[in-house]
Image (cartoon, rainbow, N blue to C red):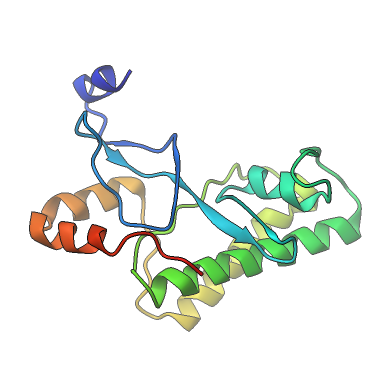
Length: 164
């Protein structure tokens, strides 16, 4: 499929999983923008950086329960956990390797709208805490990456995955 993507002008692939590190280009010339493993605050496990994946971890069954709920206490816990998880991952990359943080969002009112509220609060607070942070599209990231000197990108990627 990658050769077809490249042939039709695709610049990146966001379908894989990964870690908190700088994007690299795959063998087909597409940038890899993965959903990243992040810590799920309050649950002692990791998840891919997407609302649905966090929901599966936050339902209390170790990732086996991916059902939505309207239980307000569970929803409130999921909202706080998501917010804390995003802030912790952002803090790690901001103060570490400065790699982009990718977040997958369905913009559906899962868990009483917990993820929408958590992400909105996260954006407000991240901008306040880190004035030089930028929230950009994948297209803009491709443009920035392609404008860099290859040696700069190699140095950024050489930092490896950010742990926290």
